Image (cartoon, rainbow, N blue to C red; front, top):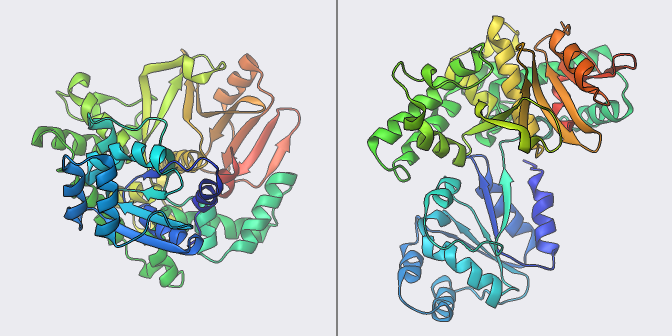
Length: 435
């Protein structure tokens, strides 16, 4: 399956500065698959090592040998010449060796011609919670998310439809009614599978027979998240709190307070007790944080209310799996009033996949704009509607008060633009184009 991060991997290979590359992302989003494919396709010589399976390398880097001695012995252990031209070493599960992570600085400074790529389960948690010397400035980071809707369409063999969506987005013209409906139907299928590669592959392998899709795949992925947790938590108490936060998110997203509330986790929950578990979830990339901005001015980050935020699940398919909504009800749009929450989580995932930091706006009168993006046109409000009912008092208030160059309204409606209101209509299946 094609992943857009591949282009960034190529840029890294072709760059003059050859710092080791580290790919971060939620577990099972496809890091190992795409790095393996990249190494096989783009290099003459390739060596893969998994530190969960190769304790000898971990022991080597825990030793008191000098960096030069470790490097020489690493080549012997691998039976691989790292110095050979057009070669690459892929270290998977690198979080198993803090000392090897620290040694990436040595690779960068002493063997800059050597190409090394790294990934690992919950690597973000490991990096954030460890106290070892991290090689700041000596490692190139790339962040990987689950497959966005564009990658999903490619996996489904819908490249022609994808090209039509891009053309209509750029030229601001409508799709035909039949193509619009086809794209909306595929969008609903994506709500079922989400962007986890194993989930999407199962749909493809079943030749898009939606009712033979294996819904247990996403349940197993969530279970695997918590099975991994024991390696990176400080206590059983913290593990329980992490799980409580995660399982509360479907309810959190539906509350009317426009923010995450610790009281929704448990009646006696206190924020100070949940700061560390919340930090764990963010570092693991299992959730995506949207920051509340009361004053939408440049730079948005400077006007964030640190006590007010939202948490979205990193994958809309996992959200629907946790909710236990049947495939049939999702595909027939029979989700009742909760549909708005699902759609908002979907949009958050698509915006985050495109590199957008998530922000939203709330004022004292409880008017709310679902998302704010910052681009060459300034700060642009993005309103999300789950259906074709696009009336919104909040957006009118925002436009009147802050006068953005235009606004984006995401809904089930086709493309369009109203020059009087300066509102551009974006169908739900085209959110991946917003950057």
